Amino acid sequence: MPSPDWDLFENLPRQGVDALLALASPLSIREGERLFDIGDDANGVFLVETGQVRLTLPISIGDRQVPVMVGERGPGHMVGWSGLIPPHRFTVQAFAVSETEVLSLPRRSVLALFDERPDLGYSVYLNLARIVGQRLQVFQTMWIREMQHVVKSKTA
Image 1 (cartoon, rainbow, N blue to C red):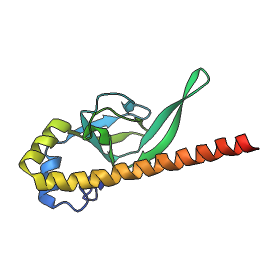
Image 2 (tube, rainbow, N blue to C red):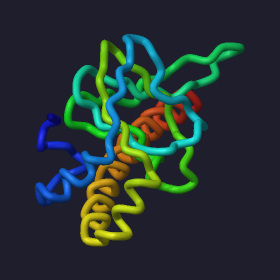
Image 3 (cartoon, helix red, strand yellow):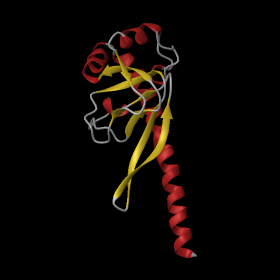
Image 4 (cartoon, one colour):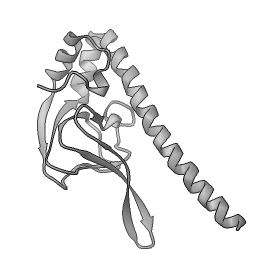
């Protein structure tokens, strides 16, 4: 049974958490295996039960792609927020750093539950907004650092 401290389920009543977990399917990911790739259809979200998922963004350097790490998520964290946010395409790559177990929550089933339980949907989307906001802060920090580097090199 997963931890009650899921970031996506923060402050939800136990009944709501149980209703969402009833929709979940377990998925095992081997070390180094990709969970999803940038641009893939995002048909749901994933809850990390065990292991570690690394989120990367591919950057072109010359004629090759280099994955730049933008974060890691472990037990209790959700990955793949694009599954609940249009246009439902993943914005980063995700792969298992070690043997990892996740729960897959399919978008259609989750949204059907939210139609029945708007209060639950509202609470989950508040948590989702916080998670997306945290990701935005990471990207903003990375962008600011890069811009400082560019400006410094042009003024030197």
